[in-house]
Structure formats: structure tokens, C-alpha cells
Amino acid sequence: MSTSRATESIPWWRRNLLAVCALALMLTCVPLAAVFPADFILFQPDPYLDAVERSGFYETYPQVAYDLAVSGGELTLPGVAGFIQALFPADKTVSVMRFIFPENWVRAQVQRTVRQYWDYYNFHARELRVAVDFRPVKARLQGEDGKALVSAAFMGLPECTPQYLLSIAALALQGKTDEMPRCRPPRQVEGLVYGGLQLALQKLTGALPDELVLMQRSSPDPLYAGPGGLYADFRNGLRFSAALLLILLAAAVVLLDYSVRRLVEWAGMPLYAGGVLAAVLASMFGAGARWLAGAITAILPATAKTVFGLFSAMALTVFQQFLAWMGVAGVILTIIGLSLILASRWVRK
Image (tube, rainbow, N blue to C red; front, side):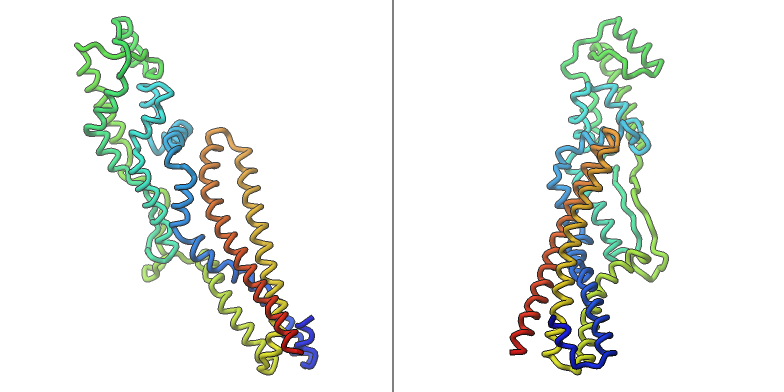
């Protein structure tokens, strides 16, 4: 092996130190292969926004939002699901949710929250505050769009008979709005009914928060912008791998008596092995992430399965893009190591 030939005329203690440096260099190749894909893919907002776009989320979000409201989202969107179920048939829920939460607003909130998150974790903001702004939705539904929504609930329905009106009144007093007959109020009381529903809608939207805070955290040090702790240590550790590579090469140069020829012979094998290791680990992590997401999805109930499947697919898209570039970086290190091995043979001739 080229490494042994490079060290065969060196004292034993230097050989041991060079062996340690070679092992450290090989292991350093793994975080080194990840540092640039992490900085430019994993820790940036744009790949996540692109993943949301490609996932079809902006086409399916009305159903997702409705499922969340039905299965527990009343804590964050109080009354929305009940209002829709009471006034609209099941086949119109998606279009109603799209009207209440229009696509341009959803896009703006997705971009806002993703950028707020990474502004903090990229050390551009002192405080993490990820929040959804409901004020545009409330303003719309408390104005003309709210009136249009109420009017749309009765379009195409037959006019209520006196028996229906009595039944509606009785059910309303009992709070059983989901059992009310679907019919259009007579013209004599149409304005009164529409006015009452608009008032109910205004109260409903008034109960929505101006901002729904999803995540919030203040930096412990007022002079320090961005997160600390494990995240900062992990990210700095990835970046330090590049500096560690230079340190190990410099140490090898000293131990090899400043011989470039010996350095070429010594460095080839650890770089080659480290590149292979990085590429293999990237492939294994990708397969493991897909398996884990599928295993979790399989044990979740129907609604949670749909929501988790959608968001895990977005996360996997970004993670696999990161791993693909990590694998490419590993292959590049492998090629560099192989080139040094071949060069060392040419230098000996």
C-alpha cells in the first residue's frame, strides 16, 4: 500500500502518529462531504419552498386544512369546520376552504414562516418567531367576501317551506346545526337570515387570532444573533471539518519531513477510503429516512397519515437532495484519493 511505502523509512513513533492522522483524515471526509450541501441546501429556505411547490401542496391544502380543522384544529381555527359543515354540502368543503384561505395568502404564509425559521437558524435574527398572520383572512371575511360566502351557501337550493322553517328554528335552539334541512330562506326573511349568518361569521372570524405563533424562542444572549447550543455546535463542527483537513495535512507534512512526494503517497488512501465511506453513508441515510417515514405513516390514523405523508414527503425531498450532493462530494474525494494513489506510483518510477 502507498501509505506504508511512504512511511517505511520513518521512525516508529512518527509512523504511529501518521496512522492516527490517516484514520482521522478518513473520518473527517464524512462531515467534509456534508459541509457544503448542508450550508447551501439543508440550512437554506429556498430548497424547502421548492419542495412545497413540487409536492402539490398548493393544490391540496384546502382538504388538508379541512382535515386538520375536523381532527383537532378547532383549537387553532375555532368554529371553521362546524360553520362549513352546517352551511355547505360535503362535496363543496374544498372549494369553501379555498375561498376562506385563498392560495395567494397560503403562499405568502408558507414563504413567511419558512424564511422566519431560517433567518433565525442562519444567524440573521436575534429571535425565533414563526407565526401565521390571519389578519388578511379576518378582514376579508368580515367584509364583502363574508357576505358573498353566506350568499353562496344558499345558491341553487329550493325555497324553505313553513315546515322546514319550524324544523330549522327547533334545531337551531338545540344547537344541532349539522341536521338542519338545506333550503333557501323565503324572500320575506332572507335579509334577516343572511344578516344573522353574517353576524355569526363575524363572531367566528373574530375568534381567530391575529397571529398564530407556531414557534418562538429568544436568544439567551442579547448581544448574540441566532441560536446557540447543539445546533450551533453541529453546524460549526461541519465547517470545522474543512479546517481539520488542512490541520491533518499540515501535521502529516511535518511528520514526513516536509516531503511532498511522501505526502502524495500517504494522503491517497485515507482520502479514497473516506470518500467511499461518505458516499456509502449518504446512500444508507437516504434509504433509512425513506423507510422511517413509511413506517411512521403506516401506523398513523387516516387524517394524520395524509398530513404527515404530505409534510414528510417535502422534508424527504430536501434531505435526499442534500444526501445526493453529499454523495457527489464523497465521489469527488474518492477520485482525488485515487488520483493521489496513481500519482504516487508514477512519482516512484
